[in-house]
Image (cartoon, rainbow, N blue to C red; front, side, top):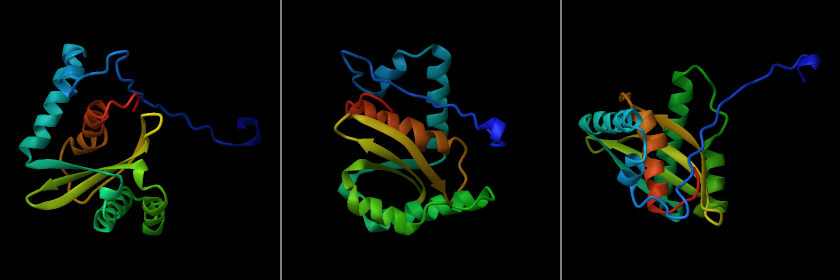
Length: 166
């Protein structure tokens, strides 16, 4: 491809795999198996977000309402535009995947002061017990919120739901 003038794109993916044959019992159990430094960093990031007054709501499948999808789309669009980029997925797309694949989505909604301020969206394969990727957006800046909403909260959900991989 490079010889034909194409630009090469390199990326990194991180995969978490639940413990087998006995899965982690909860997020604390998962953290207990990390190195001290990694455990401390995750606990610190989560504490910063909590101390900023942020709470999370986890919505799965048909429990995600049209209003939730509207909020997510607004967050997604806002974040793309703030980074001087054009959102490539629109509200019609989100409506279609909500309609045709309702059981395949986990939405993490961040709240502060009674208002929704961010959301992440995780694609699910319930049959394989696998959660994939994430879309994300926020309407208010909060340090460490991205990691909390996109990694820590979904990972906590995966542990609780006994998912095999994220």
